[in-house]
Length: 418
Image (tube, rainbow, N blue to C red; front, side, top):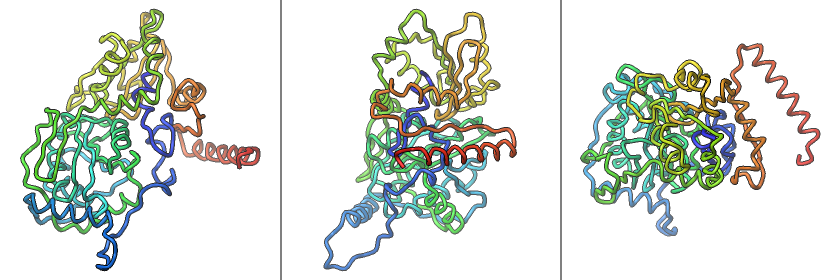
């Protein structure tokens, strides 16, 4: 249940919530229906004025009512970006212009397409996120973004960002996270960009970012005061706007469309069922009490380590039998709960436990698939699901690939839908 609520509900247009986001690259998912990059050029005067031109002119007007500062910079090595973004040690990102170079390269790669649009911003609560958010907001304003929706205290789980992008029809969103890696001044930091369907940035964007990082010469920053990220509300600066939002609201609304909350609440309230959720002092701590306690009626005691901390309480937010030992000990005790779960730093991966037993990620997805008819979102049928299998060696990987290929051929030969 915790797995479904906190990790498997990142809903994309091209796949089901039961398919974990990080298991498949954007290039493998098929991008034909997504908005394509357009190289805008000035049309002849006789042409009809188009929305794309309007966005560019609006961005120019925005630049006029904001004081934009341009500073010189130079390329910095090591900014190759993947679909999971860019991850380095925190002191690398806090060094001169390292983060700013990457952010400017992102906006350069998006070009006129992002001008006049709204983007999301948030992260897993780790050290440097709040300072980084201020840098990103000012650079977004300088590069023509119309509005930034930022999670309160710069908090936003990765699945919640995907839900926010889709519900509010945002252009995309920036997530400040190094996933399951430790946080702190001497630990890890990272950033990634999710695109218009809530999915990780496709390779054509990440490749373009890297290309710009190798030739970048200037940074654009708007002269704005720092935003009070603790206060929910709107902040307007001419035609540019920053809205600090509750990080749970849109995500919870999406969950209620995906799952049967009345039935879940009834189940949680049964005397013969108990569960425990370990947020590992990471981002899902901000969601656990509002969902499990306030919505489903569970006792507050079911949530462990439920306060997001910049250093994750000195822990390692990787939900496995080693780093989630506190939860393992609880579930292995004689009076342990029937169900246990823990999630990683940015809330898109988890570990599921029963009473004195561990469920592998592939098995948990298989159980969701087997009971998909009980999930409202799948009322029209489950079309696909996938799970990441951690194979022990190259021989096993090769054997698995061979077996998978054979099964695929068998399926294609017998399926009436092909």
